Each structure stands twice: as structure tokens, then as C-alpha cells.
Length: 257
Image (cartoon, rainbow, N blue to C red):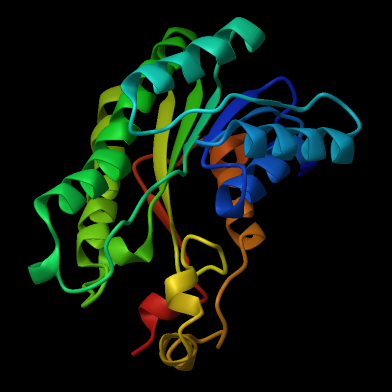
């Protein structure tokens, strides 16, 4: 069974991986043998994360390449630097996202809405299109978009963010259809409320936290590392017959009334 999850010799790029869910995914991919590229906006944070992963693994399992997902040029540099260092990209995890607005959609500015769609959908497509050619040529690759259960529900406070996350589901489905004949798989993970800095506005609010946990079968929110296993599955041989799908990891929140 261990061979199903063996990622030895594989190269993974994980955006937004200096902390939170992305960091947990990068750590677990490295634990299973992959070489990992840590990427987020701040170079210092990327370097620190890579050094800590290398120390934990006892090998040079990670390198740092800072990139802002809002910049197409920086994403191109991320891919080019990865190819220059490792010669290939086998696994791409599009985890980085933004949500500059918290409140009803009637109050969101055009600039804020565009930023959400640009960073959470368009940037994903940019990076995927840059990383995919080598996968298509080798007829082997796994692309994972970290979406959200917000894409399955409405919200009075993060509606625009939810729109972007629903779009990620369809982006994965479309690309899965296009690239299935080349054995390139594209899937999503949809986390529920996870204890990360990104979701701090939700879980630090006592009323929101109470509401969420009261209607979640496991009666708690998740931890970043609890998302990482799904990413390892999708990146490995264990998930080799799954494409165009979304794995919901939410403690049961979406199946409870």
C-alpha cells in the first residue's frame, strides 16, 4: 500500500505554501518523497519554510521561489526556475488565493471583485497553462486546485469569494476533459473551515465559530494538516483514476442541516 503514495522522483510546485494549508501540503508531499517548490509572495517566508522542511526530511527536499499570483510574469518565473532546477513539474497545487472583502455583495467594489476573480481563478489558469505542457508531453501529471466548500454554498459575508471558488470547480472539470487523453489529471479539494491565518476572520469570531461547529457532525473546525492527505492522494498513484472531481474535507459540514 505504501507504494500507492510514493512520490519519490516527483517534483511539486505548491503556491501559498509558506504557511497554512499550502505549507501542510508541501510538508506531506516532501514526506512522501517529492521535491517541493515553496512559493508565496514573501521570499523570506518561503526560504524559512523550505529550510524547515529540509531539516525535517534530512535532505534537500524543498527550494524557495517567491511569486505573487497576481503577476503573470512572476508565475512564469516560478515555472522557469522550477524547470531550471529540477527539469520537470509533475505535481502542481494551486493553493494561493485572496479575499480582500468581507460583507454582503452589495457593498463590494468592482476593484475588490476583480481582484478576487483574478487571483482565485484567472491566476490559477495562468499557472496551470504554464506548468501543463511538460505533463502533457510526458503523458503524466496531477494538478490540484485548493478550492472551498464556499463554492458549494451561498454566504452573506464571503459571497464573491464563493463565486470564485465555484469557478475553480468548473476550471478543473474543463481542463480534466481537455487533458484526460494525455493522462493529466485535474482535481479540486474543498476544505471547510480550517484554522489558518487566511480564515482567521471566521474562526476567531465566537458567534461564527459556534454556528459552524454546532452544525458540523465532527463538532469542530479543521486543521491545515487534515487537508494535506487529500493532496497526497490526488498527486500519487492512489488517485490515478480520479480527475475532474472535488474532494470535500469539511468535517461533514455540507451534509448536515
